[in-house]
Image (cartoon, rainbow, N blue to C red; front, side):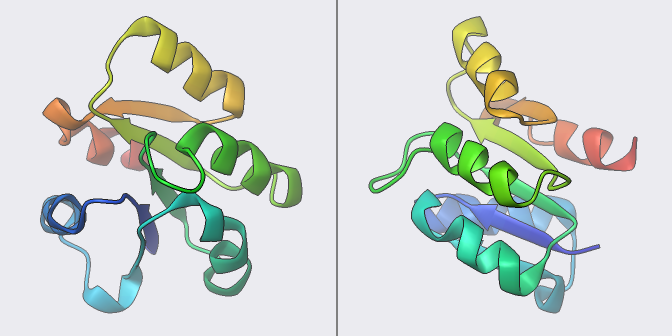
Amino acid sequence: MSMLIVDDNPEFRSVIREILGLPESEVLELDDGDKVQETYRTFHPDWVLMDVKMKQMNGFDATKLLLTEFPDARVIIVTQYAEPAFQEQAYDAGACGFVSKECLEEINHIIQQ
């Protein structure tokens, strides 16, 4: 299984890699949403784990843009903002999952469904 992790915090990307337990060759990382579409086009990961707040392009906009070209892309929003309004925005953007950074083990649950 291949994974694209999009988060502006390198330490957090490392934590996600540990939790997923995937080989390095199966994980690609980005620090912003502005390169997601281009990277997805080349790498074609099974899943994209997307943060919300990033410098150039937020995760909601990056998800929408990605899904316009790749409607079958599977995106999970992973954020510290667990409020219902953020969940609603995630699903409106086309994400197929929403995980709080406080409950990262839920990522494996979603992926295995």
